Amino acid sequence: MSKINIDDDGGDTDDVKYDKEKEALEKLNKTRSRDYDEDYSDMDTGWAWIILLSSFGTFCFLGCALYAVGIIHSTLIDRYQQSLSLTSWAGALHTALISLAGPLSSTISDRYSCRVAIVLAGVLYVLGYLGTALAPNIEVAIFTCGIVSGLAGGIAFTANTIVVGLNFKRRRNLALGIAMSGNGAGLFIFAPFLQFLREEYGPFGFFIILAGIFANMITLGVLCFPSQLERKIVNQRSLNVSSVSTRKNISTSCNCVTLKRFWTILSTKPILLLCIASFNYCLATYLLFIHFPNFIVHRGFSPAQAAFFISFAGIFNIVGRIGAGAIANMENVNVLLLYNTCMLVVAIISIVYPFLAQYYYTHVIYYVLLGTFMGPPFSLVTSAVLHFVGVDSMAVAVGLVFGFGGIGAIIGPVSAGVLVDNGGTYEQSIIAAGSCSLLAAILGCTTMCMKQRNQTIEFTVNINEEQDKMINSF
Image 1 (tube, rainbow, N blue to C red):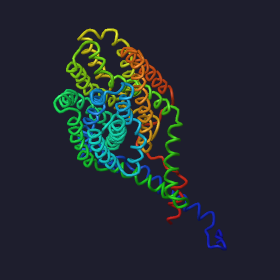
Image 2 (tube, rainbow, N blue to C red; image 1 turned 180 degrees about the vertical axis):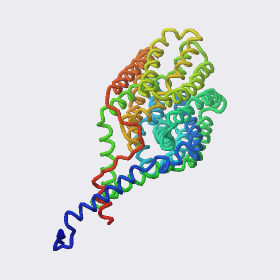
Image 3 (cartoon, one colour; image 1 turned 45 degrees about the horizontal axis):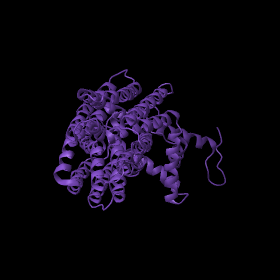
């Protein structure tokens, strides 16, 4: 009969500790291997569809802000009579921060919830547009319309993308396509409407009405109750931060954990390449839309015709996003190939467009094709990053990709404004945008050659910490 010795300090022998560790590991494995449908039964069903409708509505307002920024830009030029390059800062920041604030949005969503992030965005939009209505000069308008409203768009855009990803799995690509098609619907509905508001009510009334329109985003955000998966991720993140904060000051530890997670994910090569591709693609697309109205008028068409052409992009943006989502949801479809092909098409048509812009039907064909292929790279970002990171890192990865895009969105419109102010042409700006989109497609294609992970719902946890917690609970 084997003899069991007890240490002087009352501890167990190695055999007893081994038995406890084995039992703890079995308990951990049972927890991690529970069936997906049991743990996350609310995904792809029930309230998830209400959240999808809410997300679609929020993206409608974001489409209004994002794609109609050219009308806002023209309104500010007429109101303040400042240089094109200075005024471009308001529109550039307004659109750029929609992507650049991605990391901030993912941090708020991680720390609290996507619901809190979207409601906060609605409040900031109202304050930003009301402030612009009362702004005495272009510098104040750059802050209120560019920075405050831009931050609102950035927080809403990323959180709205993440919340759909956290409520759908089997139909995630289709759901994201439907939700983000709201951008196209918002463009189609609001582009002519904003032109009407500008002509009918002047700059002051225009921005007051915009504030009232965007107040509806608060209501839509309230509907986005956290799913079981989102609650688990938030709780897991809180536990990780709490374990660190027991040893350090809580504010310092929270910041360290957050920064370490961002850096770790950014150092993943395919995520870094997707970020650089996003930088170039957003530089191209935001440059295009901020200068489209003036370019079309410059080529001899009326402002009303310019709004009409841009609305074509809105209609087919809906078709493109839903169609890409449906295709990506099919079996054996390479999402990364679809993602990169769309950027390549945008590049080719944008390089050709200025050479044929004197013809009416060239504009119609261009905006139909642009609307169809421009949106999918944004709606497929979530699925693209999930090829390389787990779902618990999805919010950070998406935020980083959009954040790099935001940097490009600042540089693109402002540099184009400087170019035009110094003797350049809108045609040169559009060709440059097409070239940047081409570079984005090439970088995106490079990620297809890199190692991908299995597409499963799982959590990246520190196994040693989890074992210690369970062993200590005995």
